[in-house]
Image: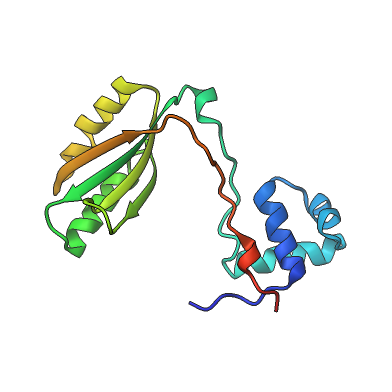
Length: 162
């Protein structure tokens, strides 16, 4: 896939929105040095082109009592499209799972990131959901002690304005 053509104003807009997706159009325009109408048109174009995938609110898990984050490596019995599709469908229905990656380079096929209130909730999640998925033959869990970096911002310094 070829990278979209963007200019320095687009990059400024993307940087500002990655820092605060809740900015009003007027605030965003002032921050990047545009008037409101061109700013709005640019943001709409970036959304239509799929560069801005979505705008979301990030919640603080601990403030909601979701104090335990686990990184879970899953090993599957077979590497078939049907097996992977079924696994991913079931995992998508688990609200505890906030990320799911099909991976390589590990003794695992998937890496999940899950959040739950405590170890008992994790135990129930693992026993009643994950290990019951057809094809799962191995699970290795690691628990996050501290987030040293916590961002969703992409490194825009690699972009070349066109």
